[in-house]
Image 1 (cartoon, rainbow, N blue to C red):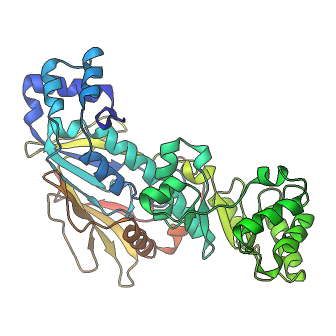
Image 2 (image 1 turned 90 degrees about the horizontal axis):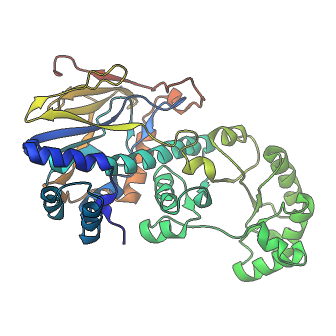
Image 3 (image 1 turned 90 degrees about the vertical axis):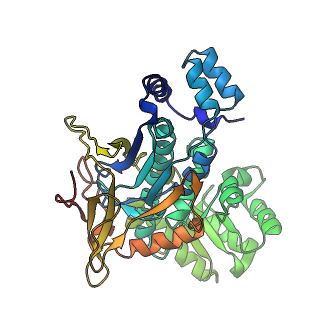
Length: 433
């Protein structure tokens, strides 16, 4: 049984122990989650994992096994163990809605609680938001590059088994149409898809026998993998097995653009004009964009999407910004923070295109015509706020937010050392300490 309370770092509990001893654990604090910058080449980020996070916070407990481990390892003293045994988060959490976009400095999440209650959540919050937002941000770029062609998430074998489930959820949120991961389907309702691998063809005496067996089991609308041996012969065998009702063929190797063009010509010549062409094999957003002119009907993406396409973390940090109502901030070289709890609005022009992220201090932002408030209540006194959007609604919301990006926000670039946000984050100096 997973002890959710132990999904944290050692130093969070040693800080807690010291704070309980000197009394600072009771101080009312505000912690804030934000990214100092975007990954290389990125124009925006996507907030994902909020639904998973709220569930994890509600289950963040220290059971008998966890407490025994901490006692045996002498991580903390008995006073702290007693405190942990009774731990329940009773603070408030506000944040950007899942599926929204974020930029450098966006106050994506704020946690208001006692220092003791809030500090032990740091690792849990960052691990979920950093992973899921990284995957969703990469997936959103792939969806944009694919246009109207669907993207399928197929990366379960390229990451940790639980990360695979979370990645499938995040990719679906950002616009992928389905996943190969069955647990993501069971747990989150993500549509699942899949047919066969090369092993299925190889276990048969011939490619024709393999295709006949698959069609018999799954129907003529199935997708047949045609590149185990010779692609042309594979396509002929596929059409022989399913006729003009063949759902799709899959190409998994070679020059995808050339093979897709040749496959389309051959399929049409064989009378299978409605048979779709799906391509897989180490695709990322750049490869998908390069295939835009090829006669391809869908993309299967694996390693690149589940690892954030070169940016496996969103770069979020969790910083204390207020203590007993007094703003506090780091002044570290290269890693400064801005003190005080904050809220933000996104400014838009008359056409509804975003123009700036405006951050102000306090609980009420400065709102002008065309502005949209970004932060919403997520937990109130430790309880989830009623009416929060589920995954399907968050997916729809995300699509609407992407539509407000300036056109250059959808351009692809590998970039320099840091991403260049498509809009600026503006701090209203008169409102900030």
